[in-house]
Image (cartoon, rainbow, N blue to C red; front, side):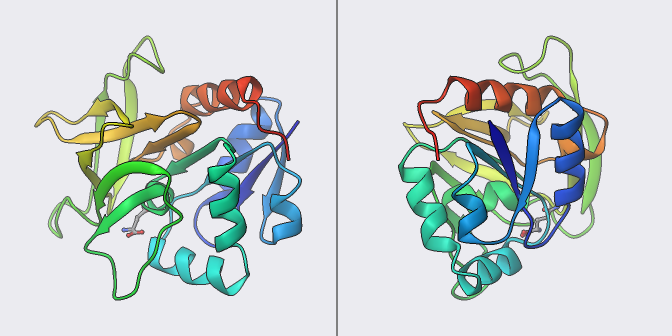
Length: 197
Ligand SMILES: NC(=O)CC[C@H](N)C(=O)O
Protein backbone atom coordinates (compact mmCIF):
# COMPACT_ATOMS: atom_id res chain seq x y z
CA UNK A 1 0.00 0.00 0.00
CA UNK A 2 1.47 3.33 -1.09
CA UNK A 3 0.30 6.70 0.18
CA UNK A 4 0.86 9.95 -1.73
CA UNK A 5 1.44 13.53 -0.69
CA UNK A 6 0.42 16.17 -3.22
CA UNK A 7 3.71 17.99 -3.77
CA UNK A 8 2.82 20.92 -6.03
CA UNK A 9 3.42 23.51 -3.33
CA UNK A 10 3.37 23.90 0.46
CA UNK A 11 4.66 21.78 3.35
CA UNK A 12 4.50 18.39 1.66
CA UNK A 13 7.88 17.27 3.07
CA UNK A 14 6.62 17.52 6.65
CA UNK A 15 3.64 15.31 5.81
CA UNK A 16 5.84 12.78 4.02
CA UNK A 17 8.12 12.64 7.10
CA UNK A 18 5.21 11.92 9.46
CA UNK A 19 3.77 9.24 7.16
CA UNK A 20 7.16 7.56 6.74
CA UNK A 21 7.81 7.66 10.50
CA UNK A 22 4.53 5.74 10.88
CA UNK A 23 5.85 3.11 8.47
CA UNK A 24 3.76 4.05 5.43
CA UNK A 25 5.37 3.75 2.01
CA UNK A 26 5.04 7.33 0.79
CA UNK A 27 5.58 9.02 -2.57
CA UNK A 28 5.30 12.63 -3.69
CA UNK A 29 2.55 13.22 -6.25
CA UNK A 30 2.98 15.80 -9.02
CA UNK A 31 1.62 13.95 -12.05
CA UNK A 32 -1.44 11.86 -12.90
CA UNK A 33 0.80 8.75 -13.23
CA UNK A 34 1.88 9.17 -9.60
CA UNK A 35 -1.69 9.74 -8.42
CA UNK A 36 -2.62 6.50 -10.19
CA UNK A 37 -0.21 4.57 -7.90
CA UNK A 38 -1.52 5.64 -4.49
CA UNK A 39 -4.20 4.23 -2.20
CA UNK A 40 -4.62 7.51 -0.34
CA UNK A 41 -3.45 11.12 -0.60
CA UNK A 42 -2.51 13.94 1.75
CA UNK A 43 -2.98 17.52 0.53
CA UNK A 44 -0.66 19.78 2.52
CA UNK A 45 -0.89 23.32 3.83
CA UNK A 46 0.37 26.10 1.63
CA UNK A 47 -1.60 28.47 -0.56
CA UNK A 48 -4.81 27.00 -1.92
CA UNK A 49 -5.15 29.41 -4.85
CA UNK A 50 -1.65 28.48 -6.07
CA UNK A 51 -2.27 24.78 -5.50
CA UNK A 52 -5.50 25.09 -7.49
CA UNK A 53 -3.75 26.76 -10.44
CA UNK A 54 -0.86 24.28 -10.41
CA UNK A 55 -3.15 21.26 -10.16
CA UNK A 56 -5.04 22.45 -13.23
CA UNK A 57 -1.79 23.31 -15.03
CA UNK A 58 -0.31 19.86 -14.32
CA UNK A 59 -3.48 18.10 -15.50
CA UNK A 60 -4.12 16.81 -11.99
CA UNK A 61 -7.38 18.57 -11.14
CA UNK A 62 -9.68 16.23 -13.06
CA UNK A 63 -7.88 13.00 -12.00
CA UNK A 64 -8.06 14.25 -8.39
CA UNK A 65 -11.81 14.85 -8.67
CA UNK A 66 -12.26 11.41 -10.24
CA UNK A 67 -10.23 9.76 -7.46
CA UNK A 68 -12.27 11.50 -4.73
CA UNK A 69 -15.49 10.41 -6.46
CA UNK A 70 -14.13 6.86 -6.64
CA UNK A 71 -13.63 6.89 -2.87
CA UNK A 72 -9.92 7.56 -2.50
CA UNK A 73 -9.11 8.52 1.11
CA UNK A 74 -7.78 12.09 1.22
CA UNK A 75 -6.55 14.10 4.20
CA UNK A 76 -6.26 17.87 3.70
CA UNK A 77 -4.63 20.30 6.14
CA UNK A 78 -5.28 24.04 5.94
CA UNK A 79 -4.91 24.84 2.21
CA UNK A 80 -5.58 21.11 1.69
CA UNK A 81 -8.87 21.46 3.57
CA UNK A 82 -9.78 24.36 1.28
CA UNK A 83 -9.02 22.15 -1.74
CA UNK A 84 -11.46 19.51 -0.42
CA UNK A 85 -14.30 21.93 0.36
CA UNK A 86 -17.34 21.95 -1.94
CA UNK A 87 -17.63 25.72 -1.39
CA UNK A 88 -14.85 28.29 -0.87
CA UNK A 89 -15.69 31.68 0.65
CA UNK A 90 -13.21 34.53 0.04
CA UNK A 91 -11.31 32.65 -2.65
CA UNK A 92 -9.43 34.64 -5.28
CA UNK A 93 -11.28 35.31 -8.54
CA UNK A 94 -11.86 32.04 -10.37
CA UNK A 95 -10.49 29.86 -7.56
CA UNK A 96 -11.74 26.28 -7.78
CA UNK A 97 -11.57 23.31 -5.46
CA UNK A 98 -11.50 19.56 -5.94
CA UNK A 99 -14.43 19.30 -3.54
CA UNK A 100 -15.83 16.22 -1.89
CA UNK A 101 -16.47 17.60 1.59
CA UNK A 102 -19.98 18.97 2.03
CA UNK A 103 -18.72 22.12 3.74
CA UNK A 104 -18.19 25.83 3.13
CA UNK A 105 -14.76 27.07 4.14
CA UNK A 106 -13.72 30.70 4.60
CA UNK A 107 -10.08 31.39 3.71
CA UNK A 108 -7.92 33.40 6.12
CA UNK A 109 -10.86 33.46 8.52
CA UNK A 110 -9.00 34.42 11.66
CA UNK A 111 -8.24 37.93 10.39
CA UNK A 112 -5.04 39.77 9.73
CA UNK A 113 -4.17 40.58 13.35
CA UNK A 114 -4.20 36.98 14.48
CA UNK A 115 -2.83 35.29 11.40
CA UNK A 116 -1.25 32.55 13.47
CA UNK A 117 -1.98 31.07 16.87
CA UNK A 118 -1.71 27.83 18.79
CA UNK A 119 -4.21 26.08 21.02
CA UNK A 120 -5.14 22.66 22.38
CA UNK A 121 -8.19 20.97 20.92
CA UNK A 122 -10.33 18.06 22.01
CA UNK A 123 -10.76 15.68 19.09
CA UNK A 124 -12.36 12.61 20.68
CA UNK A 125 -12.79 10.73 17.38
CA UNK A 126 -9.06 10.90 16.71
CA UNK A 127 -7.13 11.27 19.97
CA UNK A 128 -7.66 10.41 23.69
CA UNK A 129 -5.78 13.49 24.89
CA UNK A 130 -5.89 17.06 23.49
CA UNK A 131 -4.25 17.82 20.17
CA UNK A 132 -1.85 20.76 20.05
CA UNK A 133 -2.96 22.70 16.98
CA UNK A 134 -1.10 25.41 15.06
CA UNK A 135 -3.20 27.73 12.89
CA UNK A 136 -1.37 29.66 10.14
CA UNK A 137 -3.55 32.01 8.08
CA UNK A 138 -6.08 29.30 8.68
CA UNK A 139 -9.52 28.72 7.18
CA UNK A 140 -12.65 28.10 9.24
CA UNK A 141 -15.43 25.67 8.37
CA UNK A 142 -18.43 28.00 8.31
CA UNK A 143 -20.99 25.44 7.18
CA UNK A 144 -20.91 21.73 7.93
CA UNK A 145 -23.39 20.11 5.54
CA UNK A 146 -25.50 17.08 6.31
CA UNK A 147 -23.04 14.66 4.75
CA UNK A 148 -20.07 15.91 6.82
CA UNK A 149 -19.29 15.57 10.53
CA UNK A 150 -17.52 18.17 12.68
CA UNK A 151 -14.62 16.64 14.63
CA UNK A 152 -13.25 19.63 16.53
CA UNK A 153 -13.91 23.28 17.23
CA UNK A 154 -12.03 26.19 18.77
CA UNK A 155 -13.18 27.79 22.05
CA UNK A 156 -15.82 30.00 20.40
CA UNK A 157 -17.41 26.95 18.77
CA UNK A 158 -16.19 27.47 15.21
CA UNK A 159 -15.45 24.20 13.43
CA UNK A 160 -11.83 23.40 12.51
CA UNK A 161 -11.82 19.68 11.67
CA UNK A 162 -14.25 17.54 9.68
CA UNK A 163 -14.65 14.14 8.10
CA UNK A 164 -16.95 12.63 5.56
CA UNK A 165 -16.47 8.99 4.66
CA UNK A 166 -12.91 8.63 3.44
CA UNK A 167 -12.22 12.37 3.52
CA UNK A 168 -10.61 14.13 6.49
CA UNK A 169 -9.70 17.80 6.85
CA UNK A 170 -8.22 20.15 9.44
CA UNK A 171 -7.82 23.94 9.49
CA UNK A 172 -4.59 23.46 11.43
CA UNK A 173 -1.27 21.69 10.84
CA UNK A 174 -0.75 18.40 12.71
CA UNK A 175 2.31 17.74 10.54
CA UNK A 176 4.44 20.47 12.15
CA UNK A 177 3.93 19.84 15.88
CA UNK A 178 5.12 16.27 16.33
CA UNK A 179 1.46 15.23 16.30
CA UNK A 180 0.98 11.92 14.50
CA UNK A 181 -2.52 10.77 15.56
CA UNK A 182 -4.35 12.42 12.64
CA UNK A 183 -2.01 10.70 10.20
CA UNK A 184 -2.49 7.41 12.06
CA UNK A 185 -6.26 7.90 11.91
CA UNK A 186 -5.99 8.68 8.20
CA UNK A 187 -3.85 5.59 7.51
CA UNK A 188 -6.59 3.58 9.25
CA UNK A 189 -9.04 4.95 6.68
CA UNK A 190 -6.68 4.03 3.84
CA UNK A 191 -6.33 0.47 5.14
CA UNK A 192 -10.07 0.07 5.64
CA UNK A 193 -11.07 1.62 2.32
CA UNK A 194 -12.25 -0.41 -0.66
CA UNK A 195 -10.40 2.03 -2.90
CA UNK A 196 -7.36 0.66 -4.71
CA UNK A 197 -5.58 2.55 -7.48
N1 LIG B 1 -1.33 27.46 6.20
C1 LIG B 1 -2.10 27.42 5.13
O1 LIG B 1 -2.22 26.40 4.45
C2 LIG B 1 -2.74 28.72 4.75
C3 LIG B 1 -3.86 28.59 3.76
C4 LIG B 1 -3.95 29.83 2.91
N2 LIG B 1 -4.35 30.98 3.66
C5 LIG B 1 -4.88 29.56 1.74
O2 LIG B 1 -5.80 30.26 1.52
O3 LIG B 1 -4.70 28.62 1.05
